[in-house]
Amino acid sequence: MDIINFYIFRKLSRQTCYQFRPTSRLIIASALISGVLWLLSSYRHYLLQSNAYDLGIFDQFLWLHSKGIDTYSSLFEVHMLADHGAFILLLLSLIYKIIPGPSALFAIQGLALSFTALPLWTLAKIEGARDSQAWLVCITWWLTPVLFNANLFDFHPGLIALPILA
Image 1 (spheres, rainbow, N blue to C red):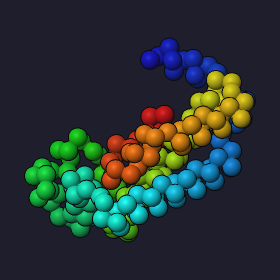
Image 2 (cartoon, helix red, strand yellow):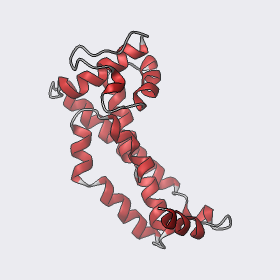
Image 3 (cartoon, rainbow, N blue to C red):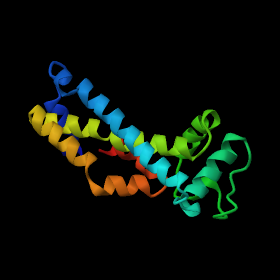
């Protein structure tokens, strides 16, 4: 792992760091795609096609924590942090105080999935890709069936980590 980090940081000098930043067109495209992903997952939910087991559990966790109530799920019969140690739910409960409901969860998930293209763009540019090749990497990510399936199948807090892990 140290060899990989050394290789990446050796290529990133202070003089050339600006050329690896994502363009404003990429940020706008990511925002538009996150809106589409949010609309698709919200539409599926409003058609009553979402599952109580995943979305219901996380919705209940976040609602309870945002109200200051003990976060013990009646559906899953565990504490909120006992479910895979999803510590990101603690931060999401702050957002849930402002915008409660599954629609907010779908919007956050859509943002995370679509904005994963930004680190992919940066990695492509670090490896010497031209703009057209970096765009191809981003478009490939956006059109990956796994992205759509993960987005449409309710809410999963692990997907929020994708921009950091990319």
